[in-house]
Figure (tube, rainbow, N blue to C red):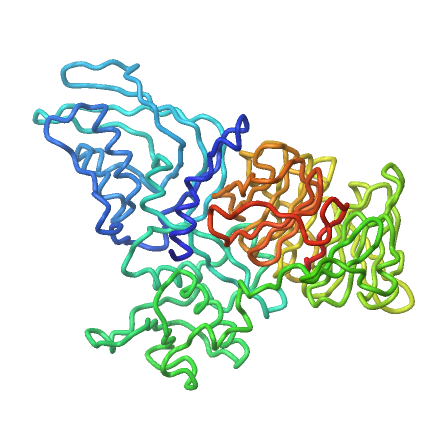
Length: 579
Protein backbone atom coordinates (compact mmCIF):
# COMPACT_ATOMS: atom_id res chain seq x y z
CA UNK A 1 0.00 0.00 0.00
CA UNK A 2 1.52 3.34 -0.96
CA UNK A 3 1.80 6.25 1.45
CA UNK A 4 -1.29 8.05 0.17
CA UNK A 5 -3.46 4.99 0.59
CA UNK A 6 -1.94 4.21 3.95
CA UNK A 7 -2.82 7.66 5.20
CA UNK A 8 -6.35 7.30 3.96
CA UNK A 9 -6.64 3.93 5.64
CA UNK A 10 -5.56 5.52 8.91
CA UNK A 11 -8.82 7.44 8.96
CA UNK A 12 -10.58 4.43 10.40
CA UNK A 13 -8.49 4.79 13.54
CA UNK A 14 -9.22 8.42 14.21
CA UNK A 15 -12.30 7.95 16.34
CA UNK A 16 -11.57 4.62 17.98
CA UNK A 17 -13.07 4.03 21.35
CA UNK A 18 -9.67 4.65 22.89
CA UNK A 19 -10.26 8.36 22.66
CA UNK A 20 -13.33 7.79 24.79
CA UNK A 21 -14.94 10.86 26.19
CA UNK A 22 -12.62 13.21 24.35
CA UNK A 23 -14.65 12.65 21.23
CA UNK A 24 -13.31 13.05 17.72
CA UNK A 25 -12.95 16.35 15.97
CA UNK A 26 -10.14 15.51 13.57
CA UNK A 27 -10.31 13.74 10.27
CA UNK A 28 -8.72 13.49 6.87
CA UNK A 29 -9.81 16.28 4.65
CA UNK A 30 -9.09 17.73 1.31
CA UNK A 31 -9.59 20.72 -0.84
CA UNK A 32 -10.24 21.66 -4.38
CA UNK A 33 -7.20 23.86 -5.03
CA UNK A 34 -8.43 26.99 -6.74
CA UNK A 35 -5.22 27.32 -8.73
CA UNK A 36 -6.19 24.23 -10.68
CA UNK A 37 -9.22 24.36 -12.93
CA UNK A 38 -10.01 20.71 -13.49
CA UNK A 39 -10.02 17.53 -11.48
CA UNK A 40 -10.29 14.10 -12.98
CA UNK A 41 -13.12 12.07 -11.52
CA UNK A 42 -11.95 9.69 -8.83
CA UNK A 43 -11.08 6.10 -9.60
CA UNK A 44 -13.26 3.79 -11.62
CA UNK A 45 -14.46 2.08 -8.45
CA UNK A 46 -16.20 5.25 -7.26
CA UNK A 47 -19.83 5.60 -8.34
CA UNK A 48 -20.66 9.22 -9.10
CA UNK A 49 -24.07 10.04 -7.58
CA UNK A 50 -26.75 11.29 -9.97
CA UNK A 51 -30.37 12.30 -9.34
CA UNK A 52 -32.75 9.34 -9.29
CA UNK A 53 -36.18 9.71 -10.92
CA UNK A 54 -38.96 10.39 -8.39
CA UNK A 55 -36.40 10.58 -5.58
CA UNK A 56 -37.62 11.86 -2.22
CA UNK A 57 -36.23 15.32 -1.37
CA UNK A 58 -34.31 14.26 1.76
CA UNK A 59 -32.60 11.43 -0.14
CA UNK A 60 -31.76 13.81 -2.97
CA UNK A 61 -30.06 16.17 -0.49
CA UNK A 62 -28.01 13.28 0.90
CA UNK A 63 -26.87 12.28 -2.59
CA UNK A 64 -26.04 15.92 -3.25
CA UNK A 65 -23.72 15.89 -0.21
CA UNK A 66 -22.00 12.77 -1.55
CA UNK A 67 -21.58 14.32 -4.97
CA UNK A 68 -20.17 17.50 -3.41
CA UNK A 69 -17.01 15.55 -2.50
CA UNK A 70 -16.17 15.32 -6.22
CA UNK A 71 -14.60 18.65 -7.13
CA UNK A 72 -14.20 17.91 -10.84
CA UNK A 73 -15.27 20.79 -13.11
CA UNK A 74 -16.45 23.08 -10.31
CA UNK A 75 -18.46 20.35 -8.61
CA UNK A 76 -20.29 19.43 -11.79
CA UNK A 77 -21.60 16.21 -10.22
CA UNK A 78 -23.20 18.13 -7.36
CA UNK A 79 -24.73 20.77 -9.67
CA UNK A 80 -26.88 18.08 -11.27
CA UNK A 81 -28.97 18.12 -8.09
CA UNK A 82 -29.71 21.86 -8.41
CA UNK A 83 -32.24 23.73 -10.46
CA UNK A 84 -30.67 25.41 -13.53
CA UNK A 85 -30.85 28.79 -11.81
CA UNK A 86 -29.23 27.53 -8.61
CA UNK A 87 -26.57 25.62 -10.55
CA UNK A 88 -25.66 28.85 -12.31
CA UNK A 89 -25.39 30.97 -9.15
CA UNK A 90 -24.07 28.52 -6.53
CA UNK A 91 -20.68 29.74 -5.29
CA UNK A 92 -18.89 26.49 -4.49
CA UNK A 93 -15.58 28.28 -3.87
CA UNK A 94 -16.82 30.40 -0.96
CA UNK A 95 -16.03 27.90 1.80
CA UNK A 96 -15.63 24.17 2.18
CA UNK A 97 -16.57 22.64 5.51
CA UNK A 98 -15.96 19.05 6.51
CA UNK A 99 -18.40 17.60 9.01
CA UNK A 100 -18.52 14.42 11.00
CA UNK A 101 -22.05 13.51 9.94
CA UNK A 102 -24.85 15.56 8.44
CA UNK A 103 -28.28 15.32 10.11
CA UNK A 104 -31.33 16.54 8.20
CA UNK A 105 -34.69 17.62 9.57
CA UNK A 106 -37.68 19.01 7.68
CA UNK A 107 -38.25 21.85 10.12
CA UNK A 108 -39.16 24.21 7.30
CA UNK A 109 -41.99 21.93 6.27
CA UNK A 110 -42.78 20.12 3.06
CA UNK A 111 -45.55 20.87 0.63
CA UNK A 112 -46.53 19.54 -2.75
CA UNK A 113 -43.92 21.59 -4.62
CA UNK A 114 -41.61 22.98 -1.92
CA UNK A 115 -39.52 21.50 0.87
CA UNK A 116 -37.01 22.92 3.31
CA UNK A 117 -34.43 21.01 5.34
CA UNK A 118 -32.15 22.11 8.13
CA UNK A 119 -28.72 20.50 8.05
CA UNK A 120 -26.93 20.26 11.39
CA UNK A 121 -23.49 18.76 11.86
CA UNK A 122 -20.37 18.81 14.00
CA UNK A 123 -17.56 20.63 12.20
CA UNK A 124 -14.17 18.98 12.09
CA UNK A 125 -12.28 21.02 9.52
CA UNK A 126 -12.30 23.50 6.71
CA UNK A 127 -10.51 23.65 3.38
CA UNK A 128 -8.49 26.61 2.24
CA UNK A 129 -7.51 27.26 -1.38
CA UNK A 130 -4.59 25.10 -2.37
CA UNK A 131 -5.68 22.00 -0.47
CA UNK A 132 -4.87 23.33 3.02
CA UNK A 133 -6.73 21.63 5.85
CA UNK A 134 -7.49 23.52 9.05
CA UNK A 135 -9.03 21.99 12.11
CA UNK A 136 -12.33 23.51 13.18
CA UNK A 137 -14.79 22.91 15.96
CA UNK A 138 -18.37 23.83 16.67
CA UNK A 139 -21.75 23.20 15.14
CA UNK A 140 -22.81 23.94 11.58
CA UNK A 141 -26.40 24.76 10.73
CA UNK A 142 -27.58 25.60 7.22
CA UNK A 143 -30.92 25.63 5.42
CA UNK A 144 -31.47 23.93 2.07
CA UNK A 145 -34.58 24.63 0.02
CA UNK A 146 -36.00 22.42 -2.73
CA UNK A 147 -38.58 22.88 -5.45
CA UNK A 148 -40.39 20.36 -7.61
CA UNK A 149 -39.63 20.99 -11.28
CA UNK A 150 -41.30 18.89 -13.98
CA UNK A 151 -42.26 16.42 -11.29
CA UNK A 152 -38.72 16.05 -9.90
CA UNK A 153 -37.21 17.56 -6.76
CA UNK A 154 -34.22 19.81 -7.19
CA UNK A 155 -32.35 22.10 -4.78
CA UNK A 156 -33.08 25.74 -5.52
CA UNK A 157 -31.76 27.46 -2.42
CA UNK A 158 -28.52 26.77 -0.53
CA UNK A 159 -25.82 28.88 1.08
CA UNK A 160 -22.48 29.54 -0.61
CA UNK A 161 -19.76 26.98 -0.08
CA UNK A 162 -19.59 23.21 0.15
CA UNK A 163 -20.45 20.87 3.02
CA UNK A 164 -18.95 17.39 2.83
CA UNK A 165 -19.15 14.48 5.21
CA UNK A 166 -15.93 12.88 6.39
CA UNK A 167 -16.65 9.49 4.86
CA UNK A 168 -16.81 11.02 1.39
CA UNK A 169 -13.37 12.54 1.82
CA UNK A 170 -11.96 9.18 2.72
CA UNK A 171 -12.93 7.84 -0.68
CA UNK A 172 -12.30 10.87 -2.87
CA UNK A 173 -9.30 12.77 -1.49
CA UNK A 174 -5.73 11.97 -0.49
CA UNK A 175 -2.99 13.67 1.53
CA UNK A 176 0.14 14.67 -0.37
CA UNK A 177 3.22 16.70 0.52
CA UNK A 178 4.64 19.71 -1.26
CA UNK A 179 8.29 20.29 -0.40
CA UNK A 180 9.94 23.63 0.26
CA UNK A 181 13.49 24.42 1.36
CA UNK A 182 14.56 25.05 4.92
CA UNK A 183 16.29 28.33 5.73
CA UNK A 184 19.69 26.69 5.24
CA UNK A 185 18.66 25.56 1.75
CA UNK A 186 19.93 22.01 2.23
CA UNK A 187 16.85 20.37 3.70
CA UNK A 188 13.22 19.89 2.64
CA UNK A 189 10.16 20.87 4.65
CA UNK A 190 6.84 19.13 3.89
CA UNK A 191 3.72 21.23 3.41
CA UNK A 192 0.78 18.85 3.50
CA UNK A 193 -2.08 19.37 1.06
CA UNK A 194 -5.21 17.44 0.12
CA UNK A 195 -6.18 16.84 -3.50
CA UNK A 196 -8.45 14.51 -5.42
CA UNK A 197 -7.27 10.95 -4.81
CA UNK A 198 -7.05 9.88 -8.46
CA UNK A 199 -6.35 12.22 -11.33
CA UNK A 200 -4.48 11.98 -14.59
CA UNK A 201 -2.71 15.35 -14.25
CA UNK A 202 -1.50 14.92 -10.68
CA UNK A 203 2.12 15.79 -11.41
CA UNK A 204 1.27 19.07 -13.09
CA UNK A 205 -1.25 20.06 -10.43
CA UNK A 206 1.27 19.46 -7.64
CA UNK A 207 3.93 21.55 -9.38
CA UNK A 208 1.36 24.29 -9.93
CA UNK A 209 0.68 24.21 -6.20
CA UNK A 210 4.41 24.47 -5.51
CA UNK A 211 4.48 27.67 -7.56
CA UNK A 212 1.78 29.22 -5.36
CA UNK A 213 4.14 29.01 -2.40
CA UNK A 214 3.85 27.58 1.11
CA UNK A 215 0.80 27.71 3.32
CA UNK A 216 0.23 30.83 5.46
CA UNK A 217 2.44 30.62 8.53
CA UNK A 218 5.28 28.88 6.73
CA UNK A 219 6.24 31.72 4.38
CA UNK A 220 8.93 33.12 6.67
CA UNK A 221 10.19 29.69 7.69
CA UNK A 222 10.99 28.22 4.27
CA UNK A 223 12.47 29.12 0.90
CA UNK A 224 11.47 28.06 -2.60
CA UNK A 225 13.23 27.79 -5.94
CA UNK A 226 9.90 27.37 -7.73
CA UNK A 227 8.86 30.99 -8.41
CA UNK A 228 5.26 32.13 -8.67
CA UNK A 229 6.01 33.32 -12.21
CA UNK A 230 6.48 29.76 -13.45
CA UNK A 231 3.79 27.77 -15.22
CA UNK A 232 3.91 24.15 -16.28
CA UNK A 233 2.61 22.09 -19.14
CA UNK A 234 3.00 18.52 -20.36
CA UNK A 235 5.90 17.92 -22.76
CA UNK A 236 4.05 17.59 -26.06
CA UNK A 237 7.07 16.10 -27.83
CA UNK A 238 6.52 12.77 -26.10
CA UNK A 239 2.80 12.62 -26.70
CA UNK A 240 1.72 9.21 -27.91
CA UNK A 241 5.17 7.69 -27.53
CA UNK A 242 5.92 4.79 -25.23
CA UNK A 243 8.09 6.80 -22.86
CA UNK A 244 8.24 5.95 -19.17
CA UNK A 245 8.26 8.55 -16.45
CA UNK A 246 6.93 12.10 -16.40
CA UNK A 247 7.91 15.13 -18.49
CA UNK A 248 7.18 18.64 -17.25
CA UNK A 249 8.02 21.76 -19.23
CA UNK A 250 8.43 24.96 -17.19
CA UNK A 251 7.80 28.36 -18.71
CA UNK A 252 8.76 31.59 -16.98
CA UNK A 253 11.60 29.90 -15.08
CA UNK A 254 14.69 32.12 -14.74
CA UNK A 255 18.20 30.83 -15.29
CA UNK A 256 19.40 29.15 -12.11
CA UNK A 257 22.86 28.56 -10.72
CA UNK A 258 24.07 24.99 -10.36
CA UNK A 259 23.15 24.96 -6.67
CA UNK A 260 19.75 26.56 -7.28
CA UNK A 261 19.05 24.04 -10.06
CA UNK A 262 19.71 21.19 -7.66
CA UNK A 263 17.45 22.77 -5.04
CA UNK A 264 14.72 23.35 -7.62
CA UNK A 265 14.94 19.74 -8.77
CA UNK A 266 14.87 18.49 -5.19
CA UNK A 267 11.61 20.31 -4.52
CA UNK A 268 9.96 19.04 -7.68
CA UNK A 269 11.34 15.49 -7.72
CA UNK A 270 10.54 14.70 -4.08
CA UNK A 271 7.07 16.26 -4.38
CA UNK A 272 6.30 14.04 -7.35
CA UNK A 273 8.00 10.90 -6.03
CA UNK A 274 6.25 10.98 -2.64
CA UNK A 275 2.92 11.33 -4.47
CA UNK A 276 3.69 8.20 -6.53
CA UNK A 277 3.89 10.13 -9.80
CA UNK A 278 6.04 7.83 -11.97
CA UNK A 279 9.67 8.77 -12.69
CA UNK A 280 12.15 9.47 -14.06
CA UNK A 281 11.25 13.15 -14.18
CA UNK A 282 12.28 15.00 -17.33
CA UNK A 283 12.39 18.62 -16.19
CA UNK A 284 12.57 21.16 -19.00
CA UNK A 285 12.72 24.91 -19.42
CA UNK A 286 10.86 26.12 -22.50
CA UNK A 287 11.29 22.73 -24.21
CA UNK A 288 15.01 22.25 -23.39
CA UNK A 289 16.42 20.10 -20.57
CA UNK A 290 16.79 22.01 -17.33
CA UNK A 291 20.23 20.42 -16.91
CA UNK A 292 21.99 18.59 -19.73
CA UNK A 293 23.40 16.09 -17.25
CA UNK A 294 19.87 14.80 -16.65
CA UNK A 295 18.48 14.77 -20.17
CA UNK A 296 17.03 11.30 -19.54
CA UNK A 297 15.30 12.47 -16.40
CA UNK A 298 15.91 13.00 -12.70
CA UNK A 299 15.40 10.37 -10.00
CA UNK A 300 15.36 10.60 -6.22
CA UNK A 301 18.92 9.25 -6.22
CA UNK A 302 20.07 12.41 -7.98
CA UNK A 303 18.77 14.49 -5.05
CA UNK A 304 19.28 11.91 -2.30
CA UNK A 305 20.95 14.43 0.03
CA UNK A 306 17.59 16.22 0.22
CA UNK A 307 15.67 13.07 1.22
CA UNK A 308 12.92 14.44 3.50
CA UNK A 309 12.44 11.06 5.18
CA UNK A 310 15.94 9.59 5.50
CA UNK A 311 16.51 6.27 7.25
CA UNK A 312 17.07 6.60 11.00
CA UNK A 313 18.87 4.20 13.30
CA UNK A 314 17.07 2.95 16.40
CA UNK A 315 17.94 4.26 19.84
CA UNK A 316 21.48 3.38 20.98
CA UNK A 317 21.59 5.10 24.39
CA UNK A 318 19.40 5.72 27.41
CA UNK A 319 19.66 7.89 30.50
CA UNK A 320 19.21 6.24 33.88
CA UNK A 321 18.71 8.07 37.14
CA UNK A 322 21.18 5.83 38.99
CA UNK A 323 23.84 5.03 36.36
CA UNK A 324 23.79 8.05 34.07
CA UNK A 325 24.25 7.40 30.36
CA UNK A 326 24.09 3.76 29.29
CA UNK A 327 24.70 2.14 25.93
CA UNK A 328 22.12 -0.29 24.57
CA UNK A 329 23.47 -3.51 23.07
CA UNK A 330 22.00 -6.83 22.04
CA UNK A 331 23.00 -8.34 25.36
CA UNK A 332 21.53 -5.52 27.42
CA UNK A 333 22.46 -2.09 28.77
CA UNK A 334 25.89 -1.20 30.09
CA UNK A 335 27.44 2.08 31.28
CA UNK A 336 28.61 4.21 28.38
CA UNK A 337 31.74 5.13 30.27
CA UNK A 338 33.20 8.59 30.73
CA UNK A 339 31.82 11.57 32.65
CA UNK A 340 28.25 11.23 31.41
CA UNK A 341 27.94 7.90 33.20
CA UNK A 342 28.66 9.76 36.43
CA UNK A 343 25.65 12.09 36.05
CA UNK A 344 22.96 11.32 38.62
CA UNK A 345 19.34 12.37 38.73
CA UNK A 346 18.99 12.70 34.96
CA UNK A 347 15.38 13.31 33.96
CA UNK A 348 15.47 13.95 30.22
CA UNK A 349 18.17 13.91 27.56
CA UNK A 350 18.55 14.67 23.88
CA UNK A 351 21.41 14.18 21.45
CA UNK A 352 22.36 16.62 18.70
CA UNK A 353 21.53 15.60 15.15
CA UNK A 354 25.17 14.85 14.36
CA UNK A 355 25.42 12.62 17.44
CA UNK A 356 28.28 14.60 18.98
CA UNK A 357 26.63 16.65 21.74
CA UNK A 358 24.42 15.60 24.63
CA UNK A 359 22.11 17.78 26.71
CA UNK A 360 20.62 16.51 29.96
CA UNK A 361 18.15 17.97 32.43
CA UNK A 362 19.15 16.73 35.88
CA UNK A 363 17.78 17.13 39.38
CA UNK A 364 17.72 14.37 41.96
CA UNK A 365 15.17 16.03 44.23
CA UNK A 366 11.72 15.81 42.67
CA UNK A 367 10.74 19.20 44.11
CA UNK A 368 14.17 20.79 43.75
CA UNK A 369 15.70 22.90 40.97
CA UNK A 370 16.69 21.52 37.60
CA UNK A 371 20.09 21.88 35.95
CA UNK A 372 20.87 21.76 32.24
CA UNK A 373 24.11 19.92 31.50
CA UNK A 374 25.59 20.03 28.01
CA UNK A 375 28.78 18.88 26.34
CA UNK A 376 30.39 16.52 23.87
CA UNK A 377 29.05 13.01 24.31
CA UNK A 378 32.61 11.75 24.79
CA UNK A 379 33.62 14.74 26.92
CA UNK A 380 32.90 16.49 30.18
CA UNK A 381 29.37 17.86 30.80
CA UNK A 382 29.12 21.50 31.86
CA UNK A 383 26.25 23.18 33.66
CA UNK A 384 24.62 25.82 31.43
CA UNK A 385 21.79 27.07 33.62
CA UNK A 386 19.51 26.17 36.51
CA UNK A 387 15.80 26.83 36.99
CA UNK A 388 12.77 25.63 38.87
CA UNK A 389 11.55 23.84 35.73
CA UNK A 390 13.27 23.09 32.43
CA UNK A 391 11.29 21.84 29.43
CA UNK A 392 13.31 20.20 26.68
CA UNK A 393 16.08 20.01 25.69
CA UNK A 394 15.76 19.97 21.92
CA UNK A 395 18.50 20.58 19.34
CA UNK A 396 18.32 22.78 16.27
CA UNK A 397 19.57 20.68 13.32
CA UNK A 398 21.44 23.52 11.60
CA UNK A 399 23.34 25.46 14.28
CA UNK A 400 23.56 22.53 16.70
CA UNK A 401 22.42 24.52 19.73
CA UNK A 402 20.08 23.16 22.38
CA UNK A 403 16.84 24.88 23.36
CA UNK A 404 15.00 24.77 26.70
CA UNK A 405 12.06 26.59 28.22
CA UNK A 406 12.99 27.70 31.72
CA UNK A 407 10.30 28.27 34.37
CA UNK A 408 7.62 28.28 31.65
CA UNK A 409 8.76 31.77 30.70
CA UNK A 410 12.29 32.02 29.32
CA UNK A 411 13.18 30.46 25.98
CA UNK A 412 16.93 29.86 25.94
CA UNK A 413 19.36 28.32 23.46
CA UNK A 414 22.69 26.96 24.51
CA UNK A 415 25.80 26.22 22.52
CA UNK A 416 28.40 23.72 23.68
CA UNK A 417 32.14 24.15 23.25
CA UNK A 418 34.76 26.58 24.39
CA UNK A 419 35.50 27.20 28.04
CA UNK A 420 31.84 27.25 29.01
CA UNK A 421 28.44 26.89 27.31
CA UNK A 422 27.06 29.98 25.56
CA UNK A 423 23.59 30.97 26.72
CA UNK A 424 21.32 33.23 24.66
CA UNK A 425 17.85 34.48 25.54
CA UNK A 426 15.31 34.11 22.75
CA UNK A 427 11.88 35.56 22.12
CA UNK A 428 9.60 33.24 24.06
CA UNK A 429 6.53 35.49 23.73
CA UNK A 430 4.93 33.41 20.92
CA UNK A 431 5.00 30.38 23.24
CA UNK A 432 3.95 32.24 26.39
CA UNK A 433 0.93 33.55 24.50
CA UNK A 434 -0.36 29.98 24.18
CA UNK A 435 -0.79 29.39 27.91
CA UNK A 436 1.00 29.12 31.23
CA UNK A 437 2.54 25.66 31.62
CA UNK A 438 4.95 24.31 28.99
CA UNK A 439 5.66 20.57 29.20
CA UNK A 440 6.82 19.71 25.69
CA UNK A 441 9.29 21.39 23.31
CA UNK A 442 10.69 19.87 20.10
CA UNK A 443 12.22 21.32 16.92
CA UNK A 444 11.59 19.32 13.75
CA UNK A 445 14.37 17.65 11.75
CA UNK A 446 14.52 20.49 9.20
CA UNK A 447 14.67 23.34 11.71
CA UNK A 448 11.60 25.03 10.24
CA UNK A 449 8.91 24.13 12.77
CA UNK A 450 8.49 23.81 16.53
CA UNK A 451 6.07 21.54 18.39
CA UNK A 452 5.10 22.51 21.93
CA UNK A 453 2.72 21.25 24.59
CA UNK A 454 1.15 24.06 26.61
CA UNK A 455 -1.52 23.46 29.25
CA UNK A 456 -2.12 19.98 27.86
CA UNK A 457 -2.67 21.15 24.27
CA UNK A 458 -0.43 20.60 21.24
CA UNK A 459 0.69 23.45 18.99
CA UNK A 460 2.83 23.67 15.85
CA UNK A 461 4.57 26.92 14.97
CA UNK A 462 7.15 28.16 12.49
CA UNK A 463 10.76 29.25 13.06
CA UNK A 464 12.20 32.16 11.12
CA UNK A 465 14.41 31.13 8.20
CA UNK A 466 16.62 34.14 8.95
CA UNK A 467 16.91 34.27 12.74
CA UNK A 468 15.63 30.88 13.87
CA UNK A 469 13.31 32.63 16.34
CA UNK A 470 9.71 31.41 16.87
CA UNK A 471 7.37 33.40 14.66
CA UNK A 472 4.45 35.09 16.39
CA UNK A 473 1.06 34.35 14.87
CA UNK A 474 2.12 31.03 13.31
CA UNK A 475 1.30 28.70 16.20
CA UNK A 476 -1.88 26.68 15.72
CA UNK A 477 -3.42 23.99 17.85
CA UNK A 478 -3.67 20.50 16.40
CA UNK A 479 -5.11 17.30 17.82
CA UNK A 480 -8.12 19.02 19.36
CA UNK A 481 -9.75 15.62 19.86
CA UNK A 482 -7.21 14.96 22.60
CA UNK A 483 -8.58 17.78 24.72
CA UNK A 484 -6.03 18.95 27.30
CA UNK A 485 -4.46 15.55 27.95
CA UNK A 486 -1.08 15.97 26.19
CA UNK A 487 2.07 15.88 28.32
CA UNK A 488 5.04 15.49 25.93
CA UNK A 489 5.72 15.59 22.19
CA UNK A 490 8.34 14.39 19.69
CA UNK A 491 8.74 14.44 15.91
CA UNK A 492 8.22 11.04 14.36
CA UNK A 493 9.25 12.51 11.01
CA UNK A 494 8.93 15.90 9.35
CA UNK A 495 5.20 15.61 8.75
CA UNK A 496 4.05 13.69 11.84
CA UNK A 497 4.40 14.17 15.57
CA UNK A 498 3.89 11.64 18.34
CA UNK A 499 2.20 12.75 21.55
CA UNK A 500 2.28 11.29 25.06
CA UNK A 501 -0.81 11.80 27.22
CA UNK A 502 -1.82 11.68 30.87
CA UNK A 503 -4.56 9.14 30.20
CA UNK A 504 -4.73 5.38 30.58
CA UNK A 505 -6.71 5.03 27.35
CA UNK A 506 -4.82 5.82 24.13
CA UNK A 507 -1.79 7.20 26.02
CA UNK A 508 0.21 7.65 22.80
CA UNK A 509 -1.07 9.07 19.52
CA UNK A 510 0.35 10.38 16.27
CA UNK A 511 -0.90 13.55 14.59
CA UNK A 512 -0.12 14.80 11.11
CA UNK A 513 1.28 18.33 11.18
CA UNK A 514 -1.74 19.77 9.41
CA UNK A 515 -3.92 18.27 12.16
CA UNK A 516 -5.99 16.21 9.74
CA UNK A 517 -5.25 12.72 11.07
CA UNK A 518 -5.01 11.71 14.72
CA UNK A 519 -4.19 8.03 15.22
CA UNK A 520 -3.86 6.25 18.56
CA UNK A 521 -0.96 3.81 18.76
CA UNK A 522 -1.10 0.40 20.37
CA UNK A 523 -2.50 0.23 23.90
CA UNK A 524 -1.07 -3.18 24.61
CA UNK A 525 1.31 -3.42 27.59
CA UNK A 526 1.40 0.31 28.34
CA UNK A 527 -0.04 2.20 31.29
CA UNK A 528 -0.36 5.97 31.11
CA UNK A 529 0.37 8.67 31.96
CA UNK A 530 3.34 9.06 29.61
CA UNK A 531 6.07 11.33 30.97
CA UNK A 532 8.70 11.10 28.21
CA UNK A 533 8.58 10.34 24.51
CA UNK A 534 10.98 10.03 21.58
CA UNK A 535 11.02 8.54 18.09
CA UNK A 536 13.69 7.13 15.79
CA UNK A 537 12.44 5.97 12.42
CA UNK A 538 9.65 3.42 12.83
CA UNK A 539 10.31 3.01 16.55
CA UNK A 540 8.63 5.06 19.26
CA UNK A 541 9.94 5.17 22.84
CA UNK A 542 8.00 6.25 25.92
CA UNK A 543 8.25 6.27 29.68
CA UNK A 544 4.99 5.15 31.26
CA UNK A 545 4.09 4.45 34.89
CA UNK A 546 6.55 1.57 35.06
CA UNK A 547 9.53 1.83 32.72
CA UNK A 548 11.03 2.78 29.36
CA UNK A 549 9.15 1.05 26.52
CA UNK A 550 9.58 0.75 22.76
CA UNK A 551 7.07 0.11 19.97
CA UNK A 552 7.89 -1.01 16.44
CA UNK A 553 5.20 0.70 14.38
CA UNK A 554 6.12 -1.34 11.29
CA UNK A 555 5.55 -4.70 12.99
CA UNK A 556 2.62 -6.84 11.95
CA UNK A 557 -0.56 -5.52 13.51
CA UNK A 558 -0.86 -8.50 15.84
CA UNK A 559 2.70 -7.94 17.13
CA UNK A 560 2.39 -4.23 17.87
CA UNK A 561 2.77 -4.11 21.61
CA UNK A 562 4.98 -2.04 23.85
CA UNK A 563 8.08 -3.89 25.03
CA UNK A 564 10.60 -3.16 27.73
CA UNK A 565 14.22 -2.45 26.74
CA UNK A 566 16.58 -5.33 27.34
CA UNK A 567 18.57 -4.57 30.49
CA UNK A 568 16.33 -1.68 31.60
CA UNK A 569 13.27 -3.56 32.82
CA UNK A 570 11.80 -1.97 35.95
CA UNK A 571 14.55 0.69 35.95
CA UNK A 572 13.85 4.40 35.76
CA UNK A 573 15.33 5.38 32.38
CA UNK A 574 14.68 7.95 29.66
CA UNK A 575 15.22 7.62 25.89
CA UNK A 576 18.18 9.36 24.25
CA UNK A 577 17.78 10.05 20.53
CA UNK A 578 18.63 12.89 18.18
CA UNK A 579 16.22 15.80 18.32
